[in-house]
Image (cartoon, rainbow, N blue to C red; front, side, top):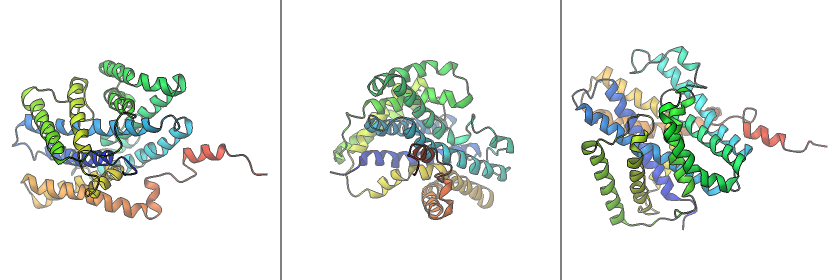
Length: 351
């Protein structure tokens, strides 16, 4: 038996690979490099990536939170989330924003200096996910404060359903539409936290069956039923049932993988946050270089180095940055840490 739920690491590992591919794919589309492809195919691939990756990360976050919420909730717990989520959100929103400003004329969506000023209420690009994840934790902590832990478990799914119903009227400030779309998957994870096993059920036939079902469902959703998501950020309400079915098949696939022999995939899951924060630096640079300097056209010329450097380059860079003083790009020093400040405030004064 393993000490941690390896299936969740596998899920995050596969999910982050899909995220890197999706952002590379959308970058190629924005640069006009997929103009010879059928528009419905380009949009379908992008939708399939969103349907797979976004529910996974919210579901896993809800599952992990739900398993310890009885003993780990409250102001100090939320302060830790602010340190781990909101702090890197601010830092890397500025870093990527500067990259976009300095790359003006080269990137598809070059930003201006004004885009760096409104990140407190209007997250840009991929960082909406971190912003919404923090809002999700804040909402759950508020419900726990008002109703208690056990009632919060019972209320999570109804709140998720109400948010989906409110989606058409949600103002675009503070990523409220994305919160309405995404909270339901966190709620599903929180609700199932005590029901899902913590150990693997290794079965290669089971893995292949789940993978085949996932592939067939994804194809039918986009090529036959036209039930893909209408949002590039999260899953729009029209695709809720599709996303839940994909989530079930995907988790069955992850649980069917062996406990040993796939340490590299579990490692990607453990480092998924690092990859998420940094990968755009590599993905965009690879595309710009190959397009502007090499004038490449073949899709695989972009996909292979883009994905490899987007993942491998991110792992190497973040490891190097964290080994020195640049570690504060990822976690706050004590004087900026909300959790550290609350902890010191709760300690008795020295005699």
